[in-house]
Length: 105
Image 1: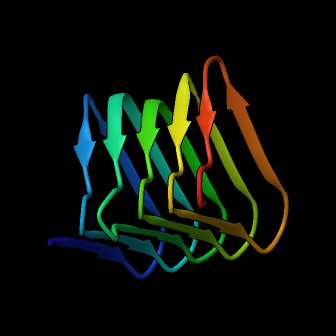
Image 2: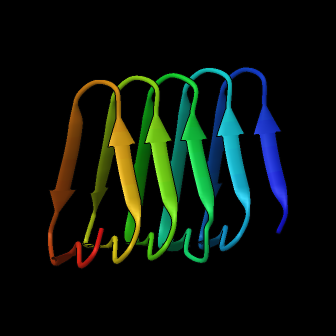
C-alpha cells in the first residue's frame, strides 16, 4: 500500500511495476513505461493530473482505478479491466496487440 506522488511530472521506467493497492499520482503529466506487467489491481490508483500515458506489455487493472484529467493512452499487448475503472476527461486511446477484458468494468 505504498504511494509515489509528484506535484509535477511523474515518469517511471521499469521491467515490472506492482501498484496493487498502491497510489501513483502526479500533479501534471504522467508516463509509465513497463517492459512486463503493470499490476494496478486490488484498488490500486494511477492518477494523472494532466495526461496519462502507459506503455506496458500487460496492464492488470482488475478492481483498480486509472484516471486522467486530460488524455489517456495505453499501448500494449493486453488489458484486464475486470471490475476496474478507466476514466479520462479528454481523449482515450487503447492500442492493444492482444486482448481487452472489461467484465464488470
